[in-house]
Image (cartoon, rainbow, N blue to C red; front, side, top):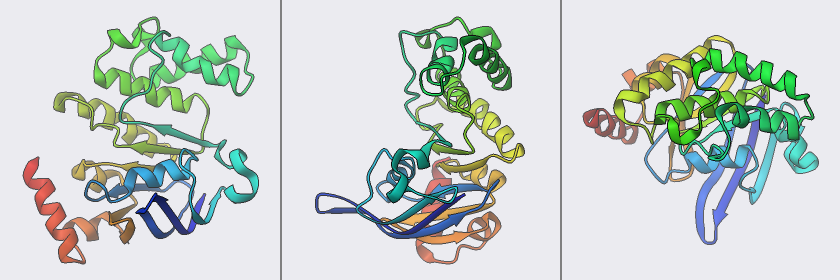
Length: 240
């Protein structure tokens, strides 16, 4: 599904991604953890084309990003920590915009799919509401439904709960857990360690722009392979 080979990304003289390589198979759920500034969000933004890599090779479903450009990103969806909903459109309007404009779907088809997705995320009764009328958790669930409306094969989540009040985190994580059960390929940047342990097939630990550990959650959370990872987990878990 995703193959990265020696990816490098810099902003001026600041190296944000340094020689990053990995493979993600269909249906895998990958959690990406690590300290702030380690390159986690930049990695996701590079995968979906919001940031242009400086060097290396990236393949999405076997398609070379270097050779095909935007075509490689067509089967990817992304959910941001800041929701990024259109404030002037209703929930329904947010969900049908891209399928109609980008994919050329008929309005009735797009609305039918949107209603199915709102039912999936538990927000059928909010289809005529505007983002300003929703809680943070509801906004993020709408954002997930909006990404799914494009029928992606791969979903990227950039700290989807970091902007939420603690009592709202659970409702969003429940939706993401449901997607994992549906065999959707996902890469999730998160600080929710319990969630990462429960839902992931593999966990990437990033530090200083590199993936310094790529292993199963049981190993990284129960028996960290380095003192650096152990110190990070101890600090994070003590804050929760």
